[in-house]
Image (tube, rainbow, N blue to C red; front, side, top):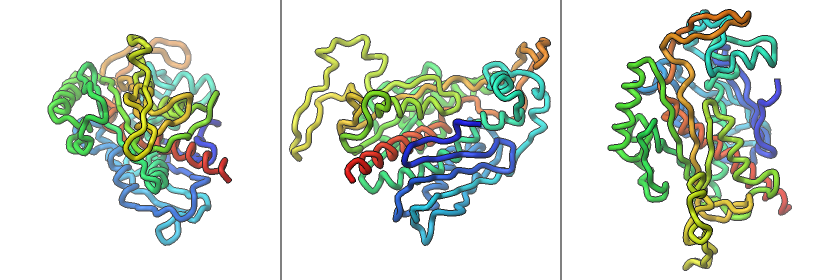
Length: 360
């Protein structure tokens, strides 16, 4: 099975299944001497873990991280870092009814077509539980970026038709973790929470958008043509389970604008740094960072598992009735926030280290 690794220099490889013994990640290419704060890693994992509030899946996993190698006396050694999380609350019997059936909009059919076999217990490798290890690795990537002053913060900007339609830089993002939806506007967050609760009671699910803001990322990062920085970010985000869309800067809204309005005009600020008066480019031009804040939106579909009757087929082509069972998220976006941050950090640290290598 390919496709389990991400990155070129700061490279991660994840392994494990949703209902297996555990999950793991190996990080290769992390610089030595980076302080590793276990509390920060665990905090990021706690923001992603199941069972944290009434609007997410009630599977109870502590997601307690263990570092097996690559860290000594609290700092990275420059050798491969390996981390694991042991599963403690698997209920594989919840998935027995779909052993031979294809759930609508899941990876059941496609995995069968590709491998001739699938782990039906929670989807195996196709389960969003795999993302726990991305978050752990992303926390270390954040630690590398923090040394050059880079901050990455994501938040929920839309659930269904309820939207916080403001530029990220105008918001007080310190409020993001003050509610279970992870929306920095309390009033909008309350409306979103009510919608998620109502949707769950109806046995249904709903989608949403996570917005991410990156500050102080240096100019000149990214490779032009095929490895543009925004293309790499797009790939990173679209690799997240349930992600259906990515837009950076003005995104799809730019088609409604004229070039005279959309162009980001340059100027030199009081510190002598080159800046732009607007930032419709989202901090990236020609595939290379320009020193302005990077911001983008990530769209997530409604969770495919719904607690309603649906008609589908089994592996023999027979029509069957199916109803979701077990513990599932009615909306993924509150738990997707730290995953988006992690994938952004992994992408940006890789581009940064690639640029440093070019200078050697």
